[in-house]
Image (spheres, rainbow, N blue to C red):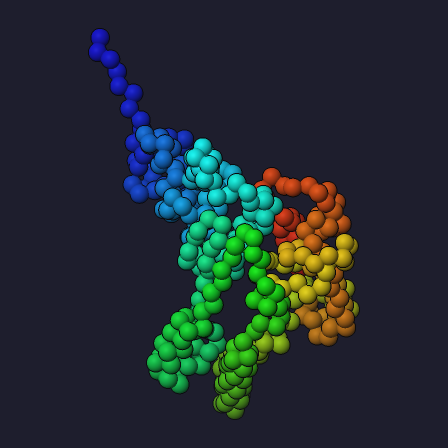
Length: 350
């Protein structure tokens, strides 16, 4: 009786876990998330791709340039684990003397920058180079389009993308100086604010003009359209936009006191020390107490605003009832961001 061949199932036709059809170039099953490369004959197959998003990564990359996932994290690519074992045998492991806490803080700083829109351009393991690029403010582009016919938009976007891009170099043992970190609420470009006022005023004037002409002509739909256009212009003004971002439920009227929390990323400067331990920190939580008067949920008058800053350990102990010395299963997560998000959503629903 001839022997039977037990060939590995094809990697690009159906998922071996859920039997779902997949694209020929898929790295992961879109249905169950199974790694479609797991049955490849070579052990090094997993090290050529990021296991978080499937994009190719170089053998010496510490982070994925597409999603920011650390290549050596638990459950991620085996590049770091395999390299570390090889380097340990040869006595040339570059990370052998690096403190584990410093590496966790370094990965957190890199991930915060990637979440904030920075681009990873160079990855050298214990140091990276990131670039922050954008094409400018949308209100400025809106104002330039009718006035310059698109030429100003191209020049303005090119200038922002090339000349105004910011480069930062992060290393495990070299924290960013405070002068390079942004201050919350104080990093808005004056040109962006001015363009917001101009765009708001332009839409407001156009809307009021349409409404006035429609009223004189006795056209009620036109008057309503003009008023709606003016309302949009008013909502786009920077002061009104900031108030709408802090809105409560539409049924709220009168004086309202709220408490919310916000995680301070590693890209942001923390000007006050922790209120519990009194020490300076790089990443933690800000508790904000706000007393304001609202009409239909929209803040009209702010009576007082107070902030308390907590480092990650004290926030875990004081705000969430955890152990200050406890390290979570995921070393990159110092604070329970999901719990903060649930608190903010519950406050907004009220």
